[in-house]
Image 1 (cartoon, rainbow, N blue to C red):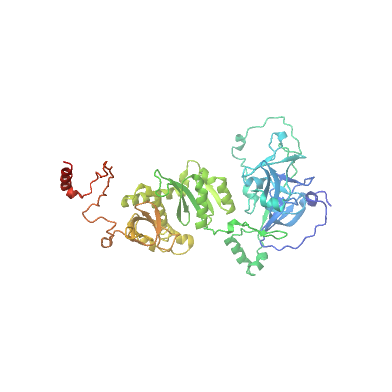
Image 2: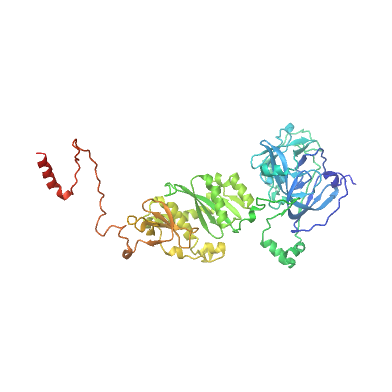
Length: 565
């Protein structure tokens, strides 16, 4: 065996039999691994000379992606066609043992796992693999604020790791270290233009420095390298899975669809209770969505909220509004919007803390949603700002025309968003946003029955005869699109100021159909209530209270005086 053979690096020398593989997706990657030597049974290497992870025998394989990679080492020794997998390992942290999830690792199954510092860092983990002897911290800080210690052995950084037991995998917290999105190291490429003022921007180093030719300034061995290149799809291998259609149709199908699922690998097979691929549980809306917050100085009626979160699609212009009482409820609003309209391709915001929190990042990672934020003090770069200005202008116009109180601002804004989603837009070639989003023509019959804040009567359920009557007064304030049949409305009651969802309603503006029991007669004022006063009794048991009608007061008064004269 040659001195630089990659098999010496990854495991003890043995005869490797190449088993035939069946590919579901033929994305091919090529890795190259630098030469290194490891001892012990738990050490996995943190390698800045690697641009992709390699899973050894110290991890548990969870599923396969259907993609493959070739590993290249010293003197171009190669391990071809290794599965790209998702693996799990047990490591220690400042909070005790945890399970780390390693997506997009090439699976060799022998030797020790190699972690790419670049791949870990791209997922926003902080890899501090510099020795403490050299002023470093020897740790990995994850996106979830777990701190994993590193050990420097023979000048190389190692993370102790072993395969988790089934009970450990089910009970310990899971911390994701790498993205499940197909890993391509070229996305972090960055060339420095030496022609510009880069030389002037870098401070000159002091002279007479001791330089060790075998190690760089941080103590890393120089003669390690790792390269990865992406090969073209092998569409021919996918033809049997797609009914032996032509390779060109396979190519077009791959470009026109997503392939988020991974081949689940368990030996022995076992029952699972959690979704393997959350991104497949929701449909995609195939557009970016901009978000921002509407603020109010008046609490909303029957809710008390003083602000709401607005979502607007950049392609379809579909606008949704969700009331919030605290900014912590933004995560719930985001989940509701994904549940109602589908997962967006990109989430656009102005970098408010609640909109870029770790919980939001967890959701966007799970559903493969990209994120983009506007530059500080340049909120106009966020399209939602313009949409909010349009919504607020129309809300003020409706409140002015109807005389609705300020406390109905949230109901009015929700009604306007529902209305906008059903109106034809010139920018959409005179089609409605809902048709652009869903592909079906919406029906607007429910919008043609009443206008906002129109007085209406709604039917009472199980009234008491005869005092309750059969109807009560309220105002139309919106559409209940998720309750009852297509003609179900939101009614704000006049007496309790609560929102009711009713389909049995009628307008109170038709003079011929006025409910006179609920309305005063023309030219008359409503009767004033009579207040009865309880009085004390005399010593002989007689009451001083007046028991006659006001018209008989004189006669009663005289009689009373005569009896006491």
